[in-house]
Length: 115
Length: 114
Image (cartoon, rainbow over all chains, first blue to last red; front, side, top):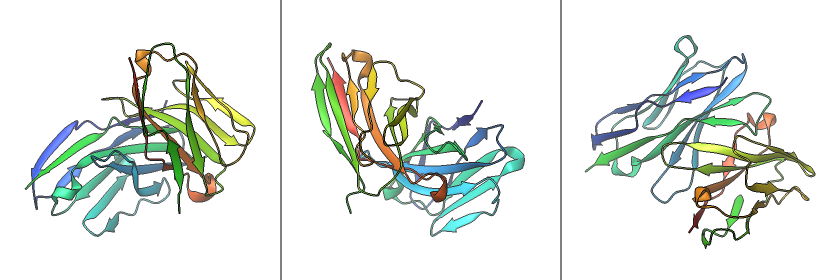
C-alpha cells in the first residue's frame, strides 16, 4: 500500500532560520512521482516541485531545496533563511506513474515563521 | 489564464439538502479529480475522471456523485448533505503521465453542513 508520512505536525522558527520539512513515503512501485505543495493562509494549493523516482538529484530553487533519497524513502524540503511569507501548510504527495488521478497526500506540516 | 475554476467558494447547507460544486478547466486536461481536505487528514480523493464519459471512485466516494460530459467540466454533487461532509473541497486537473502526473488545483470550496 502507498503511504506518505509527514511526522512534523507544526514547526515554528524565527525569521532567517533554516528549516527542513520531512517526508517519508511507502510504495511498491518502481516508477512513481513525488510532489510538494504549499497551502498559504488564503487556502489555495500551490505546486512547488515534482520529482520522479529515477531522478535522485537534489534540486535547488532560490531559498528552497529538496533532498530525495530512495534508500531511506524520503523526500525532504528545506527552506533556507526563512521568511514570514513562507508561513503555510506544506503537503508532500506520492503518485504512481500510471495513476495520475491517485495522489496520496501526507497530513501536512504547518510552518510558522515568526518575525 | 483561468486554470481550474471552482464555484461556489463558500456554501452553507442544511442537513439533507443537495447541491453541486462546479469545476471547470481551460487547459484541455484529460484527468480531473475531486479531493476533500479535513483537519489532520491531508487531502483525500473522492472521485476522478480520466476523460469525458469516464469516472471512477476514489478513497471516500460515499455521499457524492460525479459526471464528465465534457473535457472541461467535472461537477461534484452532494446527494443529501450530512454534517460529516463539512470540509474544504478541491478540484484538480492534469495532462496525465505526459506532464509527469502534476496536478493543478482550483482555489477550493468551503462547505459547511448544519
